[in-house]
Image (cartoon, rainbow, N blue to C red):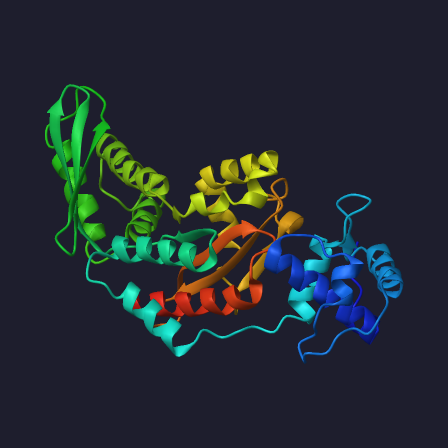
Length: 352
C-alpha cells in the first residue's frame, strides 16, 4: 500500500499525525486522544480539539494505513508506512552542534591503525544512537610486489604474498605430487612479473587473459600452480571480515524485552554480517544518507527494525565503505540522519 502524499492531509490531520509520530519516537508508546488533546505543537499552541474530534482524525489516519492501534483500548502508533511518510515529508533534521562535530572528529582522530578508527566509528555511532553501530570495512586493494611458492613437502607449498608496502602474508596451498623441477619457481616468477604495482584483481585479470589467449610460455604444471596461487588469495579476500558491529546490548531496552520474538530476530540478523553488509551495499551509491524502515528491507522485515546508512568516500570522491546504525523503528531519525552523515564525512577524510 502506497502512502498518500503529505499534501493530501489537511492541516488538522497533519498536526495530529506529527504529534503521534513524535510521541512514539520519543517514548515508544502509543498516543491516545486524551494525551493528544493536551499536547503542544512546535509553536507552543495546542490542538484546541476535543478528544472525540481527535479520535475521528485518528480513525481517518488509520484508514489510510498511516497509524495502527496495538490493541482496542490503546492509542495509536505510526505504521512503517506512516514513518516513511513522516521521514520523507515532515521531518526537520537537527544538524550536529559545533560541540558534537568536534567530539566526533576528535574521537575518530585518535592515533592507531585503520582498524582502530573503524571500530571507534562503530562504537561512536552506537553511543550516539543508543542502538547498534555498523561500519562496512573498506575494500582496500593494496598494491602488490611478489608472490613466492615455496615447497613444504609432498602435496603442499607455502604461498608468500609480499605487498608493495612491505607487508607479508602466508598461506598453505595444495599442489599435485611429482611436480617437475623448477615449476614452483617458474610459477612464482610469472605471477610476480604480473603483480608488480598492480592490485590482485588487476593481476588476476591480466594473467588469465594471457593464459586464455595462449600467449604464455608456461607449461601445464606451472599454469596449474599459477591458478592455485591466485585462487587462494582471491578466496581469502572474500572471507575477510566485511563488517564491524558494536552496541548490540543497546537493543535490550524495556520495549525490546517486552517483545522477545522481535528481539531474537534482530539479534539473529545482526549475527549474519554478510547479509547486513549486502544491505549496506545498497547505500554505497546513494547521494546522501539512506533510511530503511522495517519491511522495506527483507533482512529486517521480521524484527521490524530500521537502518540509517551513509557512504563514506576517499579524497577522490570514491565510495570506500558505509557507516550506519541499526535499531528499532522508533530511532530519532531527525537527529541521527545528519549525525550519521557527518560521521561518514569525518571518517572519509581520516582514511581517504
